[in-house]
Length: 116
Image (cartoon, rainbow, N blue to C red):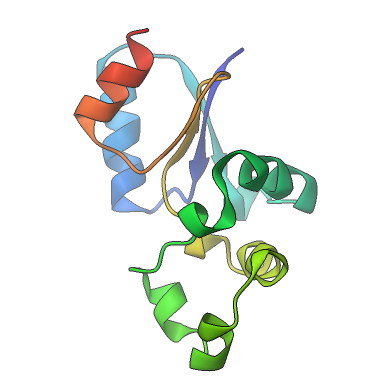
């Protein structure tokens, strides 16, 4: 199964992760949430494996712009809805190796994940 990286192309962390994969000659496809879309079936499948709590980037601008009432009452259903409406709130990158899903990027994490 091919490796798929999910994210938003102008994200600096995505750029670093893509460069690392390219420099290490690891083939992958990139799925841009904004250009390629994000549907509920894909999001639910990813959330089912990672959990919505792990997927929400609470450090980002999109989270900070949410109303405090929304943030304090968020649950799975609301999180799915928010991620569908605002894919930039999803931690990036999300790497699917076919066996494992990984959120975020560090060279050590990718080295360990992709050397097995």
